Image (cartoon, rainbow, N blue to C red; front, side, top):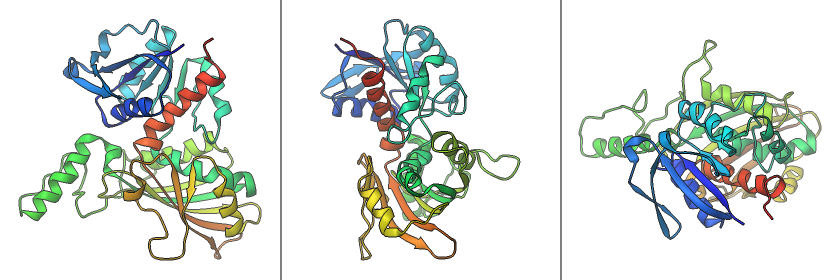
Length: 339
């Protein structure tokens, strides 16, 4: 028996990736529906060897749909996720709208799969922020080993996290610089080509950006509310994959060798940590891969029980689409199995 799956925002970067991953992982579908806004109606999008004709989200009847994978923006999710849930579907939402709702589980399958059971309250499961996902996948086995007290993280986030138009802007600005044309900025507050921008999402009253706030509150909800987290989130001129420099303080002693041993066995993690040229992972190598890569693992001698690590992952895959599909896989295995 298969499941009827609807992908909301199917024509966007993450929506396309969701369809590709559903096909790659041979998700047990009986039917897949591609949904988007009115301007995309009638266009075709690939699903494995097939092409799907995009349907109008505003007019779609979710009755009979088992699972909805949604990545069309917070305002769209706020309107259509409850509608889909009321029709009997389970919505796995990739936007920020439901993440901090106490009645909506926020899930990374390698970290807190037991939380999926909470979907019954509202029929919705939230997919965390991309930068949060890769960090907690790397931190979970270390937290289990020595209990994390505090995390200081600086992110180096690719432009794909801001959408297709942002990727286009990096390309066009780079080309403009090489041919001596004027550099136009539309998607970013400053030039992104050959530059870095310490500003992702809106500023909050205390000077924190919302992206930084998300990393703090989401880590607490997913991993442990007692962990202190401070983040600085930076946009860099990279097309795909986010990188993070993470400093961790633990309650209990932990050596670099002990951390390496536990990370080698951790689900969803690949430890590539050689003290040599090319003995680490960069965004280019992580793009297109499903794993969270950990490199540059070393002890921080300036604090008691401290470690530094470098974490890289494809933000469109594990940071968004793959995590959502993995939630769906665990959902049907534990809660929606058809006989």
